[in-house]
Image 1 (spheres, rainbow, N blue to C red):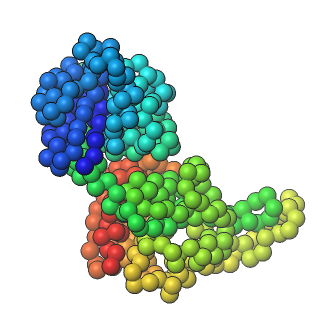
Image 2 (cartoon, protein in one colour; image 1 turned 45 degrees about the horizontal axis):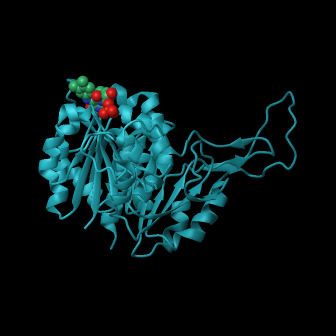
Image 3 (cartoon, helix red, strand yellow; image 1 turned 45 degrees about the vertical axis):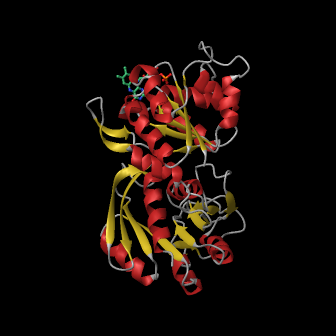
Length: 391
Ligand SMILES: Cc1cc2nc3c(=O)[nH]c(=O)nc-3n(C[C@H](O)[C@H](O)[C@H](O)COP(=O)(O)O)c2cc1C
């Protein structure tokens, strides 16, 4: 059984944490809690001591601490898992900056393994660019963020920021690796089709959806490989094969698809490419320039014959009209197990946005709606459903 260290910072969701502690205790884990001074105004240390059977720590300089032990070093060494729940905007900012001004933040700097942060706050606080950048910084360092849900918040507003219920948090933290042992291949970004050495045809795909899938798959325990076209996000943290054209992407997918369990094709592949890329830069002249285009290979159609019975293939349909009809046609034509359809004509979701809204269609004729939410949450839904389809 594991030693679980829970860092509690001062948010309204503190009231859910004694229940989370009890769930870990019931499972046989040893649980210790560090509270920030503000957290102890929401729930007292005594409550945590009662449910964990251990001292609840508040300050580095509290009376009664063993002078032989330096608490932030000792607790960081003791913990097998370190969860910050709720993680306030303030605590998240301090963690991203490496500030160590209390026992919890000092322990965070000593702890060397990935920490699980569970941010919970008012929607505006959560969406604030500072908070978002801090969360991204923590994620880039390999920490795990369990995103808040959308719904009614304690502050009386409604939106994203509500901490998941303790039972769901417990499941996510305990069984946080439902994809362990699985290999996930993700294509992301836009392909680039050269016209001449300086010009190309491409599309607006940012690669954010593909990288959200890659990042979530890794968080859920999978071994991840990314095949990236032109991408605005940084994918250096993944095992990445960089490609340019649809032809390159097809070759890379052909090479790697045999060794994956789940293929998620989130890349936006150009349907057409110039018949020939000019070797020299095309000179400007007064007349019209006509570029003849040829049809690019349809990657999913090309690799459909390579699909093993044991694999799950998931495609994306980015459509601006007849969304569902087109998605279902693609699902059938390309012999996919599932397809994620999203409406790229909407400004608030899709290309470049951090959010998405989608309909997922399955080969058995069923479908599931994903209401507008972060691409990371959609990624989680896609991966869990894909893993559920594995034979
Ligand atoms: C009633 C109340 C509820 C609060 N809820 C939250 C919250 O849910 N999330 C959050 O980030 N901050 C919340 N705050 C603000 C934090 O308590 C404040 O930023 C504090 O400095 C956090 O300190 P800590 O991170 O050291 O615990 C709340 C404040 C009050 C008074």
